[in-house]
Length: 385
Ligand SMILES: Cc1cc2nc3c(=O)[nH]c(=O)nc-3n(C[C@H](O)[C@H](O)[C@H](O)COP(=O)(O)OP(=O)(O)OC[C@H]3O[C@@H](n4cnc5c(N)ncnc54)[C@H](O)[C@@H]3O)c2cc1C
Image (cartoon, rainbow, N blue to C red; front, side):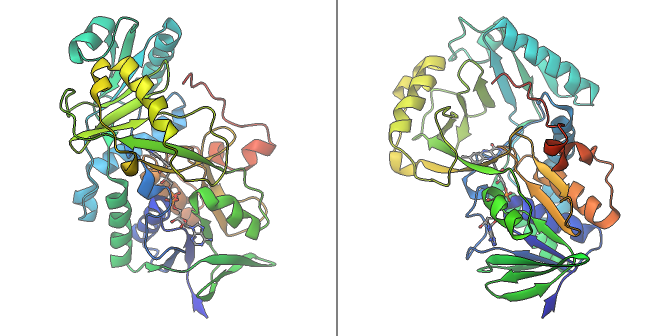
């Protein structure tokens, strides 16, 4: 039987980053198991690729303060591109409540060491992007080191670099079971045979709960469909624009190729594995788009180019990281709730630290453990979006 120090289930950006960070710390007996014939068929290949440090909860800011500089130096460190484009994230507030929220977040972000964030006045918003309808805007918040990456390239770069340092990736290798003995995890059953190991990482994205069940762990991670709409080439809005978020509706968009990528989280969406794109969504999103950016009335959209993927949602919309209680050797890297690409570098660092040293200095990882739900320590949502 093959034997590995660490077996990672799932070859998306999170599993790949963990593999990279493990090998970087000298652990080379790493196997990544991916059931598909190629990487990127889960959420990573469907993502919008947004990366931001503008959060309200300190642990998210801290994870971004590791991840974004990591992406900025990705090519230098790994010898592969990740497509980082620091075009910023621009939150537009149209109520005093939203502005107070941005102001409070700004204070926290600066206190934790974020330098590139600033508050923007109502007049400045109108001056920066006259195409935006700004009659109801009271101000905003902009961070120039936020921006976008190419999630597929980053995932492939992480995995290639891990492989250069001894890690293995098995494709077409579906995990069907996890074997336990008195000491904890002892093997993983796969469609390519059994693999012996004392350490398993669940990095199975939206399918994480199924993997949890194999080890007797009840994992509160639910799939939730998200749809994205790319536009045809459009030159009436600058392509140097940041990700712009209309806080009144949650509509957001960013440049993509010669057009734009439009996103909006439909509050009517119910949890489930459905990844069909619904044509009716286009009309809904275009109403929000033209409301905030009147020239977007002239946008052309080809429904065949639109797509849907899955968020992996937890009850408090924060990830579940670290050792699973009661199952020695079983680690969790799940439930990123829409932030798995931007937090993949920090997750790789945290998980590799916890696996190899039993502790990490990057964040207080206890805040993100699974026990927080049973112990009444779920992270309080302050987001007003
Ligand atoms: C439309 C959309 C937009 C998004 N936008 C952003 C964004 O702007 N910024 C951001 O940070 N995040 C964004 N996200 C979220 C982000 O894409 C995810 O959080 C991230 O990709 C999760 O990575 P992962 O590696 O955990 O999961 P995945 O990429 O889904 O990888 C999990 C892998 O596990 C494999 N797997 C599952 N079960 C098994 C099994 N039994 N055996 C073997 N392999 C298995 C799957 O095949 C899959 O390849 C977006 C997501 C969507 C859908």
